[in-house]
Length: 175
Image (cartoon, rainbow, N blue to C red; front, side):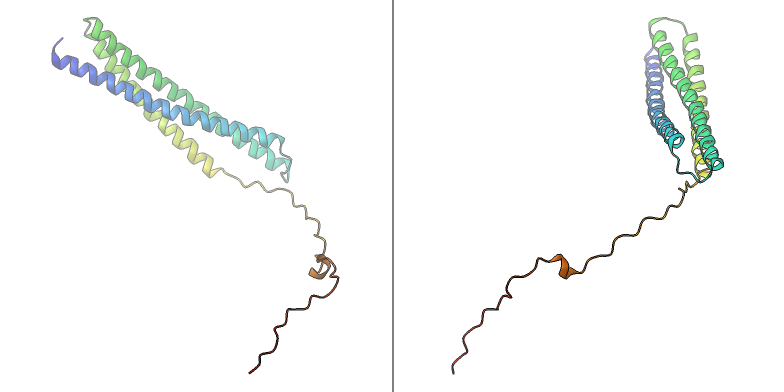
């Protein structure tokens, strides 16, 4: 292997590793979003504050739809991460074995990984945009609060005074 080929192999491995890290970061944020959506769904199922069953079922359906979109995005980003790992492994195998086809395979896996990364990013953006357009306000059933007791006058709050305190008087000035 020449110096140019070695440099190209290192660059290919480096590109694959960077894309694995980017995919991993997005995958982590999607997992956190998935947990939040599932928690919201669990709370919405147990919450009885909704005005009507229709509003409640609509809200539950929208949450379930958001979870499905997020799961699709998770699947695509997982596939992306696997493609980038396979690309890095094929470049590593090329450094051990003298098969030039491994470089072509690595480039093909890398380009496929980039395409799936783009598709996954678009799915994530569409899911977030759809979640924002479908957001509904949950209005609890109005229940008036009980009236607060009348405040007592400040005189009643103070303890009764025993003897009025006379202020200290200064002797009159002479002269």
